[in-house]
Length: 303
Image 1 (cartoon, helix red, strand yellow):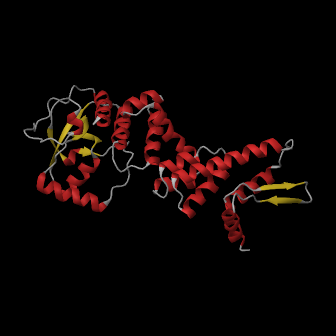
Image 2 (cartoon, rainbow, N blue to C red):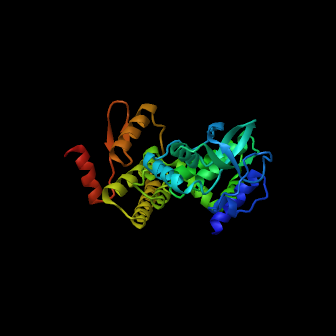
Image 3 (cartoon, helix red, strand yellow):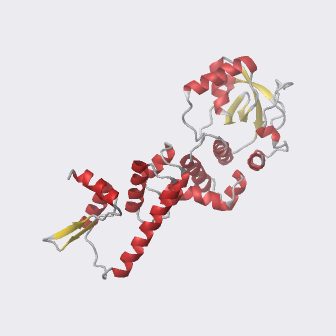
């Protein structure tokens, strides 16, 4: 309950009304309602579905058709339990602030009117409210949450502390989500598609090198590693890197072509590949961390 109350307070502050948090979070009966929205900032009103346009700031672009139809069928039987929220654009013209799934399902169910709160909000508040409502969804993955947090910071000019207050999270939690966006795209996609958990990703991000992050990620997938095993692997990679630093010779600037080749090979083999050349001859070094890792590399080489 504490999480929901915190989120409710954030929305209430944005909506600038005096309604209780529970009205934002708890399904409540909508009748009696007003059919003449003369007071644009209080109460619940029945407004025409055709007079509502969708929110251009809506961060959620896809709605599962089957789930939407199920909600439409429920609305046909029970009606709208929780009103949507809109802002007035002109006489009998409104723009959706939150509740797009309910709005779309109502249209699918053939409703002519829908219960709604009518609020005042500028474009930035519209974006902020849409993003915060999106974050409240229970089925969001960690990357979707992180992207919403990033948008709130960059597009709504919020600091991390302010963002935490809006969404009911402490600063450390917000930071952990935002750090996920620094991972290579392949790893972010895996988190988004639930191939690895946020726990896996949080362990992997403690490795500085993107090449080593990709190596650990690929090993996590291929060996179905637990979060604890990934954490152990991250520590092994960290110790190995420290040992290499102690024995490393003074570095010589590496030509751009060699750097690009190293990056390509590292991505291909899922491990840090070192290419050395004096312009005429050189060597390619492919390190491995275990016998299993060696066999994986040999499979790639088809040896």
